[in-house]
Image 1: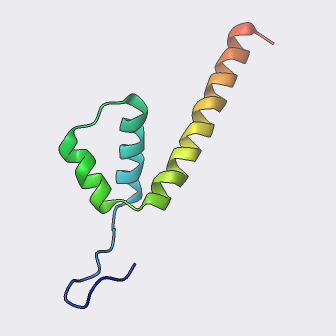
Image 2: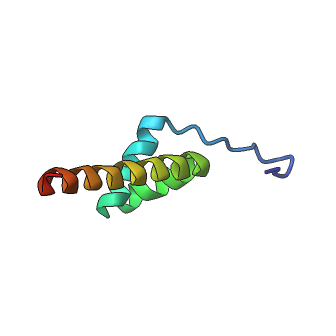
Length: 73
C-alpha cells in the first residue's frame, strides 16, 4: 500500500491481546462505536481473521466436548 510522497505510510501496530479482545467482543455482539473505529484503524486485518478462525474452532470444539460430556458417551 503506497501513499503519495507527502503522506506518511500508516502501519497498524495492534497487539495480539487487543486483537483477541476485539474478536471476543464481536462474538458477543457488543462494541462501542469509538472502540470499533479505533480497532479498524489500528488492528491488522490478517491478525483479526486468524484470531477469529482460531476462536471459532475453540468455540465449536468446546460445544462438542460439552455435548459429549452431557450425553455421557
